[in-house]
Amino acid sequence: MLHHNGDPAERCARTAAGGPTHSAGPKAPARGAGHGATHHDAPAVAPRCTAAARSAPVSTAPVSAAPVSTAPVSAASLAPPLTLLALSPALLTGCTVVDGGAPDGGGKKPAPSGRPTATATAPAYDGPRLPGFAAKPAWSLATGRTAPGALDLGGTLLFAKGASGAYLATVRLTPVGGGTARTVTCTEEGADCAYDPRTGLIGAARATAPPVLGGYYAGFENANVGGTDMVRITLSDLAPCKKVWSSADAEIPPGVELYDNGDPDLEPMPDSETLSLLRVTDSRVLVAWQASQSDADTWVHAWYDLTSGDLTDSYEATRSVLLAPSGDLAAEDAVPGGTFTGTTVWRLPDGKRLWTQEEGADETPLDPVRFTRDGSVLYGYTTAEDGTEHGLAVDPRTREVLAEYLPVDHVPAVDETTGYGHLSTTDGFHAFAPAG
Image (cartoon, rainbow, N blue to C red; front, side, top):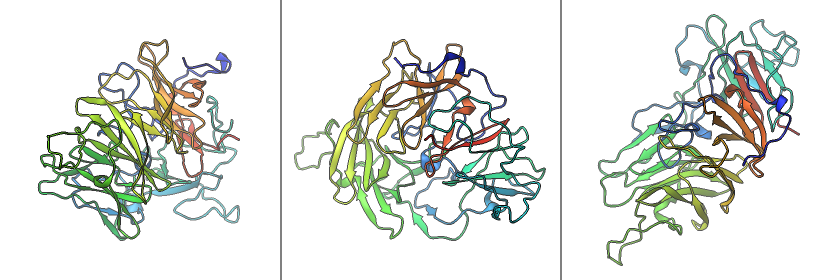
């Protein structure tokens, strides 16, 4: 059971006006799922934006030998096209907000009337307390009854206004011109590598990976679904464009069923031939392997040292997973099209299970959406019997409920650079410093 904490009178069950407009909003219910909603599905293509892909969309065209630009973004690439556009970057860690890239100047320069600033006229936050963050916002913006979109640039948020001066519901930037191109390798005759903007993943046959992760970019070899050899995923350093790792050289972890055609001279190959790159951190890469062709629900997660290539840890996990920015926790995620019976939380890198929601238990399944930067709070969504979706916050280590019945637009987005949380409603935009 999830253990409750706090006075029930403090639990907020109100539904905020308007719908979500950025990554803090709710997810569409999974088709065929009795509870929960869709989210990140790393080893299989499914609706989800990864941490590296929450902000900018990429073309849905196939990316065989396509360049991944590292050029800076440009206001000219904003969509939808506008006749007049004002960009307003805001530092998360303070009240400084600028228009068009011009710094506020700390009072040395009068703020234009259209500049969003944290002033006495900013809206007061009257929503529920958000575990893991300060009780009151560090700053807020009055947004004219519009829930504005905010593009998280890592420590800085980018807002946009249209010709009328109203905030835009979405802010999307794409790379344009200049910069050094990186080629996403996609080899083999008949190879097919395609980017899915819903998930932020490139898929090639039965292999998937984010285009860029942890300072490296992915590539695919033998990327022909009808080929005789399985797809190999590679990692190359963004700076010298040098390949540093390949799944072809990776030791297959225990628990993964091997293909056996009776020829002892052939190198071992997973029977399912299905794998995905999940994360690169601290010079290690995390890979998910499907355990067997006949069991789509059992996966083995394996950590490899990028320098030596050695397998350092492995454990049984699930098809879909949410990873904490702190690097020491992971949670099972809802799988699109399936019945989600609840989450499981693991400790990393050894994969020890801290707790599991059992099917049939007297509790509502929690579909995780994000951890706070330090991993002290896990936010997610639950669905009531009447189909109403609410936010829920729990301690991922103890399973204690920290807040429940949160309006879905009050589940904060988390900036991993600063640890700040932020949310956008029709009452205004609010940024919260980390607790403590």
